[in-house]
Each structure stands twice: as structure tokens, then as C-alpha cells.
Length: 278
Image (cartoon, rainbow, N blue to C red; front, side, top):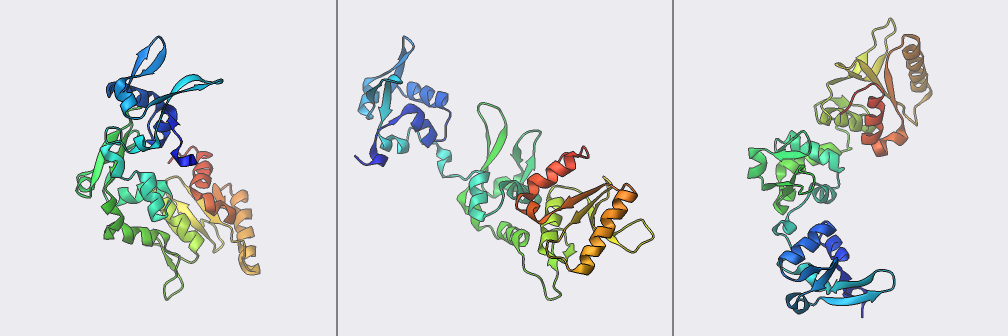
């Protein structure tokens, strides 16, 4: 018997159907496939008809197994099976899931709730389906597969991920800012999607004609990106700014090249040091 054809336990069936194990047992009991007796689960005639069998194990004792084909049984497969979670949609569009959720908010298709996400009327029109976690009560959204071909979403995703410079050699951020490096565009897009009001190339309030890469105007925090391949003149300027920030006690967050791969985590952690949660 091939590995993929071996019978699976009820717990394994729950994992295959992406359901909590307790819920899986409850569903099988409601369907009349199993019944509870003396702290044990027993197969019913209906469960045996669906392929259920007993298996004995030295470690687990007697338990019930099911043929793999049960994973596709209409009674167990949810009508939501064809819909996409935000994580699945993010993978299909090759985006971080947190950024995808923010892009969907930017399009006006969903809004953050106190916990989770809720659909807007425009989101409903785009095929979104509101759901709620049965265990936690947290609202979430499932999307019809057709959303993957939405021109509005694809255009915004392209603009978010586009790393090509224009004819003037600058990179356009989601908020219209013009950045001189793709790394600066990445940071700029993150700040915009996080809802943080910010300026770029912000002149420092000092006698010297230097400017910070970013300035969070509400929080009063500067952000600097340290170029790993900076030339001597740029490096000298960066070192001078670092010296001025320390001398004048100007709050500053420094972003290194290695932070870009995990920018969401890096910036959130850095902002928390200033008691700013996004």
C-alpha cells in the first residue's frame, strides 16, 4: 500500500481538513459515524460503511482510522474549501500576508476590527465572505478565487513590489513619494501601509544642510537607512548624521540592509522601543 493510501487517524483527518481535532470528532458524531461510550469512541454501522476501521497500538491503544478518500467526502468538506484565506491569497500573489491585508484595506475592501478583519460593501462586491473563528470569535475573511485576477489588486501589488526605477532613476512609493533607492521605497511603502504619517529627505533642524531619510511627523522620530555599498562621501555624511543625532539627542531608528528581509518585524520592534505600536 502506498504511503498516501494508508488509513489515517481522526486527528490526522482533522489536520488534512484544517479543523480542530475536537471539532472533527464532534462532526463525525453528528453525522452518526462514531459514538461515545465509556470514555471511548466507537464506530457505528454508518461509520463502518464510510470505511472506518479499528486499529490497535501499543502506545495509543485502540483507535479509529479512515481511508484517505474521506478527506473529500461532501459531508466533511466545507463549502468554504474553494475560497482563499488571506495567507493563501498572499502566497499566490507572492506578497507578505500582513502587507496584502494592508493593500486590501487600501483598496477599501476590508477594515481592521478590534481583533481580526471585517468586510466592507466594496469587499462583498469583490467576492469576500465574512467568517468568524468558532473558538475565539475573531472575524476573518475568505475570498473568491476570482480576486486573483482583479486588475485593481494586481496593479496595486505590482506598484508595491515594483523595484524598477523610472526614467529619472527614482523609485515611486505607494504614497507618491519619490525615492532614490529600492530599499528606501520598501521602507516608505511599509510606513505608508502602517498608517504612519511621514516625510522623506527631511531637513534636519540644525545649522548643517543635512536631511534624514524619513521623519515621522507625529511621533517626531527620524529613520535612517544605512547603505551597505555607500561611497566614501555618502558614508561620511551618514556618520556625521549619526554623530549629530547623538549630540542633539534626536530619536532615530537605523535600518540596516539585513533588516530589509524582515522589515515588518524589524520596524515594529524598533518602534516599540519608543512605545509606538502599529
